[in-house]
Image 1: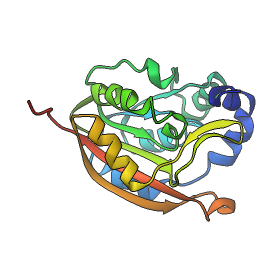
Image 2: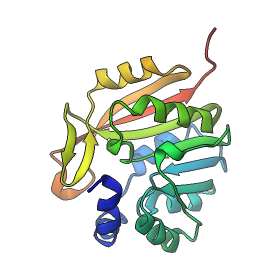
Image 3: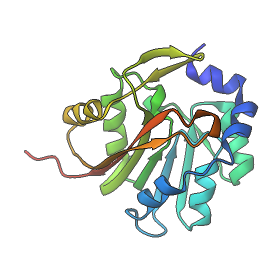
Image 4: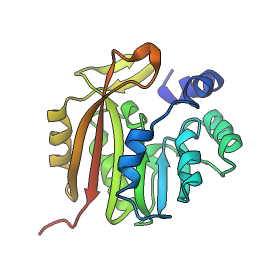
Length: 198
């Protein structure tokens, strides 16, 4: 079973356990860097929780997820047409002022991550903002029927050293917002698309 199969199989359970979680702190930090009413991509939107929050704050939201079942639930929750698309299929050209990838890039292998970041960069307008969160640690492989890549702060810096055209704004730690998992730490990353120097 790959990660997408997992979310197709357990879509209802995942929706119920995540739809009411609050990502307010990270969302506030992200959105204060994105122009008011700007075009934002919710990359791996899951339940559509954060898409709805951004919509309600007046942003122009595009939502996508690799799981067909999650897309269907997110459409009901947000009223948006949610794109069923894998990260590697991402093919937008400078259309977003912000890309929000909350707990979704955790499922990308370290080998594929530079390619995905380049696709994200291409989708962002110049000076566009990327937010993503990953689990803190040094594990890579299958855990609970899904593929995970955990990161330390040094791994994030190494990753961006491989992908030109981003400037890291901040990397910070946070506790898991799920009450039964607050012993688990996450790394949050904010980065800006910048010109690639010759």
